[in-house]
Length: 292
Image 1: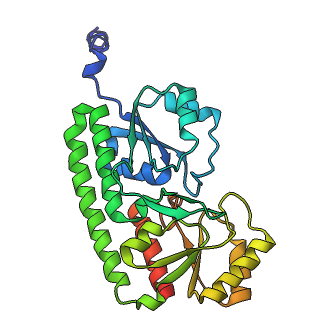
Image 2 (image 1 turned 90 degrees about the horizontal axis):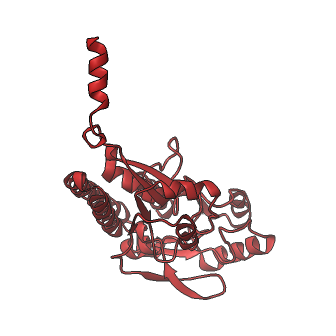
C-alpha cells in the first residue's frame, strides 16, 4: 500500500521538477561537434550531420537529417560559405531553434578555387585563435538556448579556451626552430591557409586535386610536376582524399610523404585525431617532422 502511494506521488511531480533532459544540439560537422561537447558536457546531446572523415563541402543531406534537426533546440554551423547545403536543410525542416554561426567573429581569409576564382576560406578553425572565437560563440548559443546552465557553459568555455591557448603556444614552439626556407608543404586540399598564416608555413594546394572526386591520371601528373617545380619537401594526404595517390607520388617524385592529416573532419574515436586539440597536435607533429 505504501509502495503504491509513493509511486503515485512520484507520478504527480511536474516534469519541470524532474531531472532536466540534455539540450539537443545539431552541428554541421565533427569538429564543431567536439567543440560543443567540450563546452556542454553532460548538459547537451550532440549529433553531427557530417561525421568523422566526412566532407562537409559536398555533403548531401539525408531524410533522417530532417528528423534530427526538427528535434533539436540548437544548430551550430560554421558559416563562411562552408555548408552550402545547410539553408536547404533548415528550410525543409522548418527549423525554429536557435542557430549559432561559429565563425561569425572571424576575420576571413580568401583562397583560390579550382579555375582561379577567389572565394572566402571557410577553414578558420585551423588557427587556434579562431578556435577560441568558435568556443565563445558556441557557449553563447548554449547559454541562450539553456539559460539554467548558462554559468556552467561559460565556465567550461573559459577553461577550454585556456587549453587552446596552451596548444597555440606549443605549436609556435614546435615550429619555430624550422628555417623559413623549409616551411613549404603541399596538401591535397586547400584547407590550411589560416594555420599557415598563423605559423609562417607556406601551404601549396595541389593543382587539379579536389575532394569531390577521385584524382585523374592528368591531375596526378600535374601534381608530380608541381612538386618537382616548387621543390616541395613534404606532401600530405588528407583524411578525405584517396590514399592511393600517396604511392604514386613516392614513386614519381621522391618527396617526403608526411602521413595523413586532418583538416575538415576529425578521425573516428580510435584514430589519431578524435578531438579538435588532438587534431592540432597530430597535424603539427607530422608537419614539423617532414619539414625538418
